[in-house]
Image (cartoon, rainbow, N blue to C red; front, side):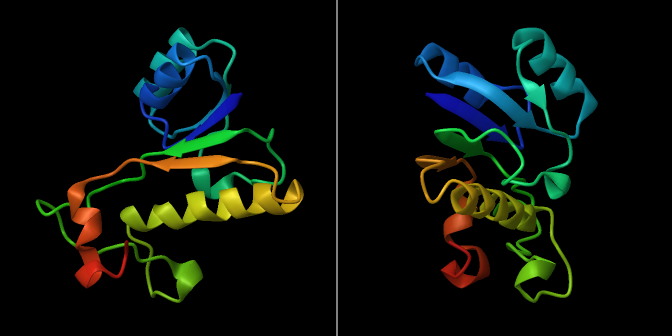
Amino acid sequence: MKLGSLFSGSGGFELGGLISGITPVWASEIEPFPIRVTSKRFPNIKHLGDISKVKGDEIEPVDVITFGSPCQDLSVAGKRAGLKHESIGDEETTRSGLFMEAVRIIKEMRCKTNGEYPTFAVWENVPGAYSSNKGEDF
C-alpha cells in the first residue's frame, strides 16, 4: 500500500504508515522546518508544497490519504470560525477551511482513477470539530 500525506507536519502519519508496512510516497506541507524533518526522515518522499496548488488528478494515486488540517478555527480554545471556504460559497477561507482542499484533492484523485484511489482517507483533528458551527461542520 502507498500513502500520501496532506498538511504533513513533521511526518507523524508517514511514520505510522511506515511502521505498518505502508509506503509514504508524497507529502504536502508549507512550513520549512517540518519539510526539513520529513526530507531527512523520509528521503524518498516527493514534497508537493502548498495544498491549494496540488491537483489530485496530477499526483501519484495512493491507497491512503492522511490529513491533519489546521485546527485553529475548530478548537474550543480557538476562534471557532469553522470550516469556511470560498469554494463552498463562504466570503472567506479560514485556516481550518483548508480542510476543503483535502476533500477536493481526494475527489480529483477518485475521478481520475474511476473511484479506485484513495481507498482510505484519514482525518485527524481536535474534538472541537464535532461542535464547530453548531455541529454542522462535522
